[in-house]
Amino acid sequence: MANGYTINNSEHQRICVVMVGLPARGKSLMAQKIVRYLSWLSIKAKSFNVGSYRRLEEAHPSAEFFDIHNTEGERMRLQAAKLAVKDMMEWFEEEQGIVGILDATNSTKKRREWIRQLLAEHDIEPFFVESWCDDKELIMNNIMDVKTSSPDYVGQDPEEAAKDFMERIKKYEEVYETLDDQELTYVKIINISTQVVINRIQSYLQSRIVYYVMNLHIKRRCIWLSRHGESEYNLTGKLGGDSSLSPRGQLYAEKLPQLVRDAVGDRPLTVWTSTLKRTQQTAKYLPYPKLHWKALDELDAGVCDGMTYEEIERDFPEDFEARDKNKYEYRYRGGESYRDVVARLEPIIMELERQENIMIVTHQAVLRCIYAYFMNVPQDRSPWMVVPLHTLIQLEPRPYSTAETRVPANIPAVSTYREKGTSTLDK
Ligand SMILES: *[C@@H]1O[C@H](CO)[C@@H](O)[C@H](O)[C@H]1NC(C)=O
Ligand SMILES: *[C@@H]1O[C@H](CO)[C@@H](O)[C@H](O)[C@H]1NC(C)=O
Ligand SMILES: CC(=O)N[C@H]1CO[C@H](CO)[C@@H](O)[C@@H]1O
Image (tube, rainbow, N blue to C red):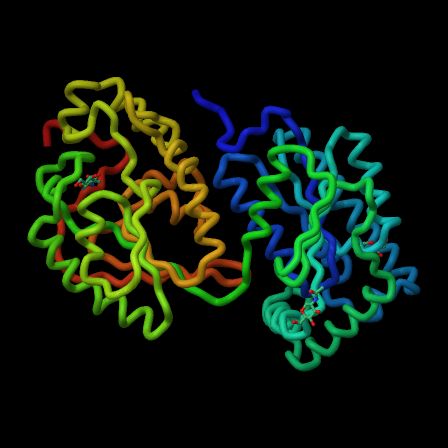
């Protein structure tokens, strides 16, 4: 079975991304996004949050706990950091991890040196990622998010929690040393990418992570997804091709502007489609700027293009079975696999991270891959997800999850869904 990485990691490197930055600088959010992005690209990644280890011993510490002169607090924090590192090392060894993320404050040079040495002993490369910010408004917004969602403050008065949290930040500020160690590999993101400082980036994998975190922003926005309206091919169950919409697909295209207006309101929007007729016809009546991307074209079914599932099962039974066994890896003869689609979608995901409100009208397999990225759906499940025709999907990325709403257009369509392990013959 194919086991190649979508991102080239030919150096067989193991990297520990060490997050650096004061509280409320969006470190955990960044750590989670890096994990989600790399996992989507089949790179084994996991985040180890020191705070959650510390919480095992001290669930609701006060700001005093974070005072550098509080020896008991310092002992417990060091203990938590050690536990997190120990679990991470085990994960690298036992689960063949590639990118481990140490999500902690690590505010001093001394602490960074401690981690660097520890990693060197295990042949793991340290890569420091600092989120540095002195924009008061950004920090306040982050504090609001933290005090409403941090497990440290469950059940506490929000005002008190915010005050305590600001005290805690002050304690860290007293000892905080920003990254400027010439010999370390690091990226320092200042004021959410207003300025980015890069030092000693050495491998391809590191440079991909740098590129990714540079493109992140934290503005509120939504992404809307829709499959194209029912096509002529869908009526006959054929795959691929470049057919036009069926009459019911056409109805969906006509109803879509109202559906989108109700969801989007007066926010600015850009519509992306594939280069195929059925997505462009679906988006035809949407009164927004449009872009056509080749990368959004449907999964290429190769020699099976234009065939029905029945014909494939009859003519290429072993292919039909192989695809059923591992739909993510299966590559059509002369065509593509889901893994191939993910690889060509990477620039789309990068651009989506940079943009604000975007609507994408595309095809079933492509939509599944994009959806899997935002909703963190594992690869054994994503190719089997049900994405109905004639439905608008709204995704709203939030600090710790993505909220989803589905708006059906109530226009009937053939179901083109085939369940895993089912035959299309003799039915
Ligand atoms: C970050 O943003 C704040 C507020 O806009 C500004 O005052 C500050 O100078 C910025 N810092 C840097 C290093 O760009
Ligand atoms: C619907 O038809 C299009 C061709 O018009 C095809 O690419 C797509 O795979 C079909 N959907 C399914 C799941 O059969
Ligand atoms: C959460 C965490 O481990 N932070 C540590 C980073 O480094 C400083 C200085 O050694 C420690 O005091 C923190 O506990």
